Each structure stands twice: as C-alpha cells, then as structure tokens.
Length: 64
Image 1 (tube, rainbow, N blue to C red):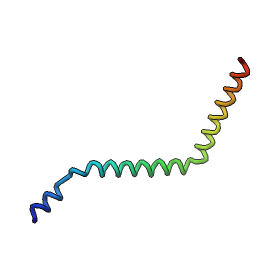
Image 2: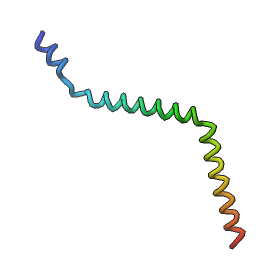
Image 3: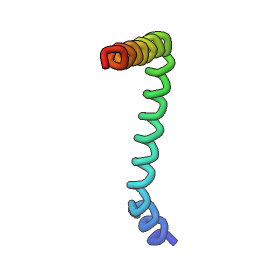
Image 4: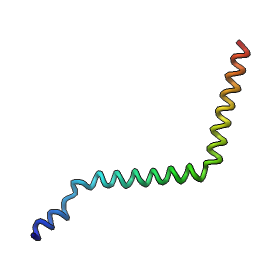
C-alpha cells in the first residue's frame, strides 16, 4: 500500500493540463479586471475610432 501511495504522489502525468488551466484562469481574471477598470476609456476610444473612420469614408465618398 505504501508503494502505491508513493507512486501516486510522484505521478505528474496530469500536472500539465492543471497548470495550463490555472494560467488560463489567471489571464481571464486579469483581462476582466483590466476591461472593467478601463471600460469608460475603452468605450470612448473605440467610439472615437469608429467616428473617425465613418467621417473619413464620408469624405472619400464626397470626393469621388
């Protein structure tokens, strides 16, 4: 029984997937936190980008 327990503790075959899962969870939490903190700034930046693109396209259509 002791030998079986030692092999079980020493076995690291499933360790890789667990580590990838932990890193993925950490990154997801970090991204959610950054988006939540910068939501107003991010929203304004995206809105300004699309407005600029729309006005550029309008000017291009008017010039042709």
